[in-house]
Length: 213
Image 1 (cartoon, rainbow, N blue to C red):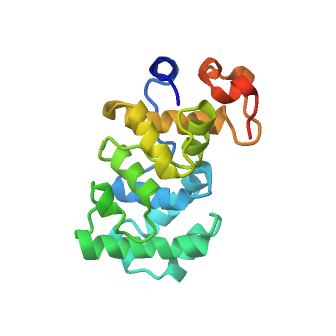
Image 2: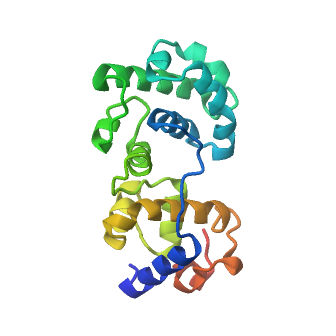
């Protein structure tokens, strides 16, 4: 496990080089972000941002989405990965918002997970980005980067989340989520990590062994 000195070095580097990170998903309100995050599973943010404008113009509110069938939603998201499942998730999510929360997106991660298609990662993204809750969402990038750097040896997203919570104080967890995502998206990529261009290499367990499996 990383020493406090090493974690402080990682935090200092991010604070200097990425002081104000944020989501690359485009959204106008909590409902719009919830739709986008559901669509983003195993899909690029770029593709999601190309898809949501027409989708949300047709279904601009939870009420409108709840009144639709999955078959009506499908044509708007057919370029997204797993469109059939996600069409069902979107309509189910919207009906859940109407039935359980009066059409309003809840701020509590536990409440968010009561919605169809909303797991712990999605719930934490919404709670953190929109409602500024002090939680970390562990997606594939966060999972990979945390293990490569040596911030966690956890074998599940929850185990990695627990380790990150020990490393990052509550007030940094929202930024830490984006730090690790963006670093994984552009530098420490899955197949060909750019180790020689990485400012974190001095604290990285994987760089020390040059094993990026």
